[in-house]
Length: 142
Image (tube, rainbow, N blue to C red; front, side):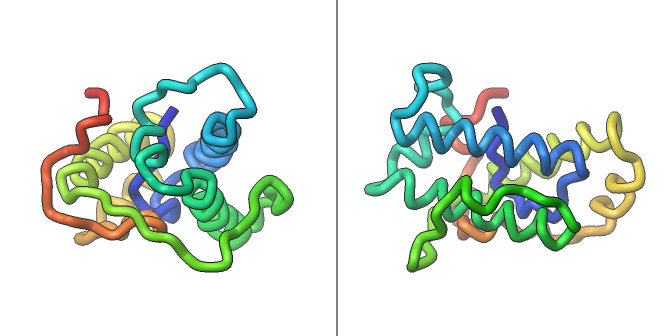
């Protein structure tokens, strides 16, 4: 499971579809609707929030918007967008790790998208996140 801190605009088609599916699974976990993946490290940052479903729903809403901008037909009924946009922190070290990780994936999967991403000087976080200084997140598995 990979719930990217990077903006979904950097993902290739396979990556964006996988993100949607994995985040839907994460939503079910955070809502207590499944027994699997309940202790997955990628969910720790959501679990640390006062209202985890609110945050994962906002995350999904932003992924949905990116998908819609590409003409994808994801199901809007799969999430409830919060009335107010919540924000979470992500460290600069985590962002750096994810940029490198994404480039490795794109090198294998989508060279065209890799060329596009390689031109980016400063990467935007997923809209749910604000970048704070720091090392790679403790929940990240290398």
